[in-house]
Image: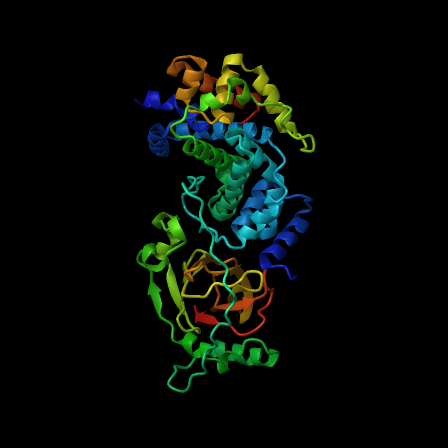
Length: 201
Length: 280
């Protein structure tokens, strides 16, 4: 099958740069031009991450698969809105994935006390859940180490909020702390993680 | 008050605000650069948290997603590029229909205005090469009778998009200053090519064009430079026959815009006569 003009240009650009692998940002910019091959490559890089974060929040694997698929389609559909000067492609995709997962878990379980179903212990990031076939990247190792460097209170708050999809009010209730304390722990914990990971946005 | 809002930046970036506070914070965010910077840093950090939870995606998901994107038009680039809010309900893709052969344009008789010289030369050259035979299709005559319309508001030109996607904010800002050229050649199809006189941007806006089965064929947009067709993107229309197709080729200096039917993925050169054409 003949390649589209976009695919031809993409390959030419790769060869002329002498790069063996385009960055995520470059792939997403190509996707914004309708480059399906770039999208397939980006999919292969990010699908496990998207599925993983969505599953952590939603718990149910088939629901997670449905939402993860929606996320990848949304990446395709809205790629023209991605602005590399505003942030990394990876951040853009994970932001989308997490927001969609949280929206879904809240609408799925509206009116129910989610704490009834899942104990606090389930909200921690279990190292054994990550499949061994999945390559663990340096950044993932670093962020896990950074999480461990937080105080227990900060780490619990962040895990409940991020992986558990809880609002800060629910976090306050689950940890039996005042609202202000919950807000502060989330912010302080994020600041420490951010600085520890060298994020300079 | 604003001190209280700044405190929410961390929770916001973790998607840990209840709906009303999230809306309030987002309103604040639009006007607060320091919060924007702070949130951007937290978002990047949170994305690392997300990536750390990676888990092998189900095997069938890849094929389903790659199939679905063939049915999924992309948004136009917007001036305000922020991660879009997730839709409340999943959007259904268009139902594929069997490909109908597009109506071939009738050759017109006299009474049509003379086409500019460059177009004549192009026709002669193409007749020799056996590609587009513009003179003997009605398309050339139709293309010569072009209405150039200055677009007043993007909403007036852009057709209705799929389902709940129709928002004025989705149309690119440059459409407000765009010129348009009409394309014709197929009955019942309204097609315009909007292009900005200085910026190298163009977009095909089409209505009433039968959607194709993407496994069999796609529409392909072409821009003619020095009488050579340059591929500018492949597309299909949604179930009500509309599409907005950003031109994936240089627009400045193009003389003609055209649409053909091609095999899936398109071709580097057109395989036959255009079903729509217009003069820029």
